[in-house]
Length: 239
Image (cartoon, rainbow, N blue to C red; front, side):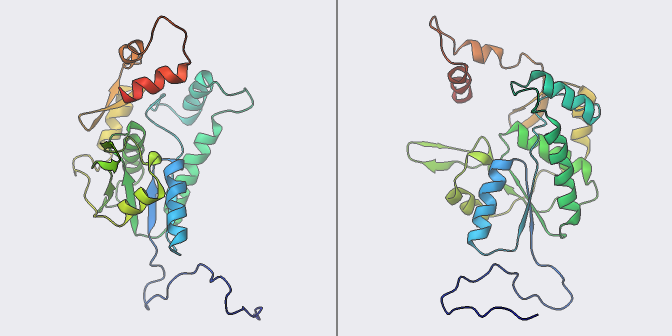
């Protein structure tokens, strides 16, 4: 079909690079467990004019029941949510369904991102391995090295806290393999069998925990004067 002529200084459209015969798609599907990190990665890819796609999981499987069906999980999350009654947790189920659909419709080349200190991301990763048991884990981007941030250098607690520059650094950095013993459906089966309401990372390992796991840490942040709950939680997070 005919197209409007473009001026000499018109912005070039994003397009796929020319591909060799015998290969329909050279783009990579990035698998990310968190909407904030996925949004930052999409911006980085767009600035590069990349045809790569991003599949992101919005639910955090580190909290709530995981042994039952989705209705059980959604009902539990609705019960503890401070959101208005008309804002339910159904969106988490839809997010997971969309995540699976994006992966199944994407190309065979997948690149999984993970910040191992995040229980949410590790849970998402193990759930992912359980959904696609026959897919090879392959090299991954594993953010477990300290990132220089002025006076504070540490490995990220989650990919969502990283800037565009930091995400770019990881994208251009080396790929590594997740331990083969954990790159299988078995860890997720064990977590489901535990039927706990909380999962945490200890010594790099994901495990089930009791609901009062963080109580002592939170109590240590309390004082004799009233304070906002966000300050208490924030203090516990950096303690």
